[in-house]
Image (tube, rainbow, N blue to C red):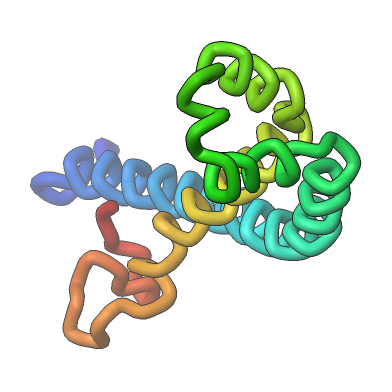
Length: 133
């Protein structure tokens, strides 16, 4: 006794497997970017305080204010002034601050289309797990 399979069953199975794989990838990306968004949002305040303290401790703002108060001296010794600015710039705290902002913005860039999609948008129809990014 041989069982006859319906026509196109293999194609439907493959489409369903692909949809399930995409849905699993979607859930993973949603979880990762949600954690990234929340983590970077929480980290923003202490990192901003660290940058503010670093600028105050390094004396960068005092050097920078010379640009507006004594422009003639700055223009005469612009090479030394530039080197002093670069040496007093708190690079590590700025790099950490920019990394936190980058993670926040990249996470937001991925999550906004998912969270605020139109109901008519068929790309995010999660009821039957048919969607495309």
